[in-house]
Length: 523
Image (cartoon, rainbow, N blue to C red; front, side):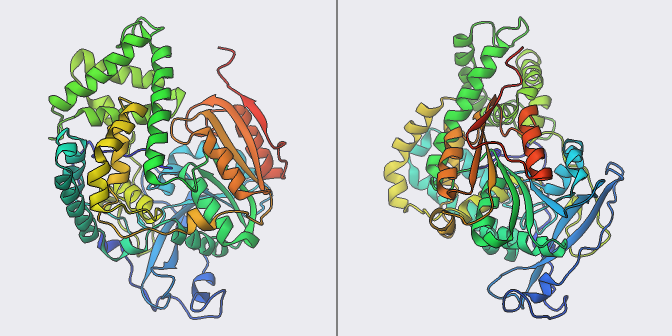
């Protein structure tokens, strides 16, 4: 499941074409026999680690790259490089633990650099490793230019229902511009290919089997890997469990409902404080939020970067701030700064995903330089991967006929987040049909036991998805019920953190269906 869908970055875009990030290195690796025709040379490689360059990079973090085929159907042709980073094990090592922080479209290397302290306990048994998946960050990043903004603005407007064909034309233009800006990697993006990349990484790291911790979208990736390589699974944890079966249209409704519930919880908390910018009445506060969105959509606020801050940008900031209860005080201050002073700077940081990733530069070739990663890459990659993973492509006639009904359904799910989430299903129009493997093939897995963590108050991946995915996976799934709030449990619940570490480090699984209480119950 996506972490967020930003309508636009709140800072200026990078106009550098991204196709340069694709390393056409067909002859760069020695040929060898391997697990599939033409794949031996990829499985025979070993990662060459070196210090990560950049003044803000942790000195203990090492960087490298793994080379994979652009097209697994034709591995003898073009290749691309994937950025990887690790913290070395401090105790007796079981090998590597691969992390995916979610998205889709999230940079693993930068996230590991920023949040490494949260995973230091796992270095007691593992080298802790993360990576930028294909199409993301320094690994041949995709981009969509400016057409996506135009399409999103058109889709958000009231005229969309009156003239859906105009919306569809803008969506087709956006899809064409994404193809133009993203180069040859775009047709080969998607979770099925990333799962195959993950297996190449596993072998390049010297591990016979995969140990894995995946958050949010990372749970989708882990499940696909387990279906594709069941005999290579060792200890696997999926936290903030994504759906394997619901189409994007249903995912959007679920996300809107989840975020509306999270917003109401936030407002109940906020209105207990005299400093709450929405007042002290939760019901009036909910109305106030809708009024702010409508006012900003009608009259956006200028920013220091030249792009006006709209109501949908405000919605994007709220969506990001609601993912963790620990962010609520900062979100409250950011909203107050807007409503009291007209200053959008703190909300812009939320809308663009928070503080930017620290720059880093590996000492090897084939990866895109940090300054060449387009600022729209997270949202462009999110759309590209979600569309590649979804086989549904309603016709133009179907969308035109159903748009009014869909819009009403999304707005019933959430008067604040409904329109924002409807763009997910619309933005796949004009793109090739995605794979049906995830929906049809990821089920009844024959793997060792894997731990699935579902959080009751998760605004992005509803708890029912954990139960539905566990049923799809079958007897291998063990569910841990986190009775807290926020997106995923590992970073917000001490109980979840302990139980996940106990499983990954020592193989100790909690009983299926056991629970963790909220850390805030005693407050």
